[in-house]
Length: 508
Image (tube, rainbow, N blue to C red; front, side, top):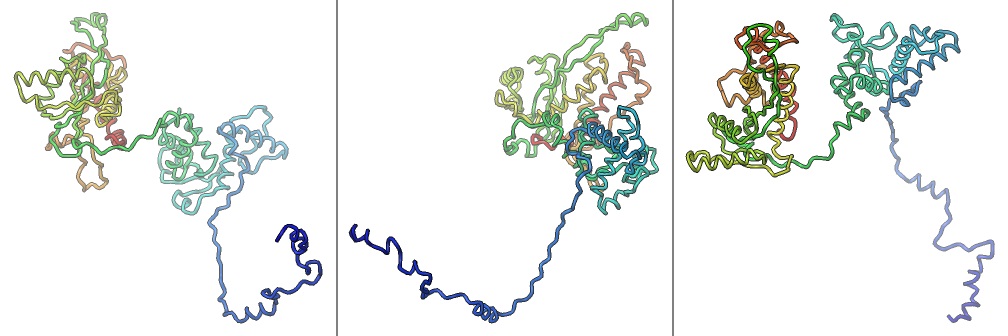
């Protein structure tokens, strides 16, 4: 079609002729919809069985709180503002509030809020939260919940015949998901100077009872105490730990594979020798001087046993003497240590000594970890940290005031070594018929019965003004034995309480 014919084409410009008329022609393929046809088709369909639909909902409807507790970050702020609000309501009504038994305290004419009003506000908030989030039937039966004279729900428990105060024998029930519970937990945590979750829970249970208390308190503190989170946060995620070395997972005699490191320095008070002929002479010459000592720690990779020895100055000569004392009782093949100059020089001395006199020293291999790699040697560094932690507390001025000589320190370390080697390295079963847990000393002395060291009665020797006396004095020896025994006993307590939790680490 040329351009002229296209311009004169009426079909293009105006469409078909029937578009301008009111009656359009019927399309041959389109039929008019008829309700009768649709009705006939429905009647021909087979009957359908009736369908019953049931809907269930486990949602628990919780009322909105009367006081917007979620707007407050501290419990004292909430109680003070609540007391002002309740005082305003009581003065408008000019009658005591029915929510609290002694609510006439809010009719006081004083401008400042009294402690009675604070306690009344807390009691009213507790009552409202208990009504808003009541305990379920299982909590009523398991906790023995009842309503006290103060209109609060309390837990009966099994301590009604104990000598505890009534607030502890019948603690107030706290809903675990309440905002008021969160404020009480956080305030107790702050008043306790950021105590641990377990200690915070112990303080709370003096007045309140929270179902699933340990989990609730731990969750609240982890989510709301940013000070503790800052100090306990990890700087980065640790990488995936590789498999343990073959020296740790294969059976071997004790101290065949050894981890070596130094612990310290530890400051020890020593008294100068003198001849005390009288009390005045002892008083004038009783001058102590402070010295530093280090402790060489040998850790068995297989049995987790340890050997402690004193090193006075960290020189190669003094450490070589400590190593000779260790080699006299044990036969190590490989020693794992860091790149300290003392260890490097000792290796050279051993090689030279083996070439000249005793070839058996050539069988000892030193494996030094990578320089500047603080993450290496975790199998003995972890035990090193625990030993250092407790040594500083046991041999400090408060527990161990003065030690006369290095022999006393050596005696204390020998007892500490026995206690540490008697620690369990497997879990203790609750069934008395099961075997006792395995200890490192079972490999060193299989027939030895594990029992605590004999401790004297230290009550008669607990004298804060203790001063060392001449070695020939009986009172001096008794006091010294008392201090040594107290230090060893504290180690026994530390290891019993801390060791099982420390084994959960990846380096143990």
